[in-house]
Length: 146
Image (cartoon, one colour):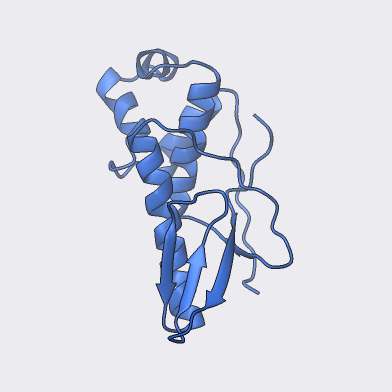
């Protein structure tokens, strides 16, 4: 797995009613809007998180984020969702089942399934340990918003 920053490009465009419409080129199903820039950005982050969780839930591919172009704004999902998306992607790419993950982590099979379940509130250290067991490290980036 390449180094991936789970920050997705979003297009913010004001519509004829004055609301700010948001679309994600990498996730065509992820659409939202807001009355203000701040509301649109907050809604965009929630929408992105929901779209990623839905893809995981339905065992669909989670796309790598494409480059942030000049006409895009960067939007990040909830950190737990980003780690679950990474775990889903790595497990799928390496053909690692929940049972195999449980074996590698020396945990119960149900606990491994919960790590992969986007609806379950997993703790960040557990998700980092699962990614580590699959050969991936986790780093944290804190950046000021533009």
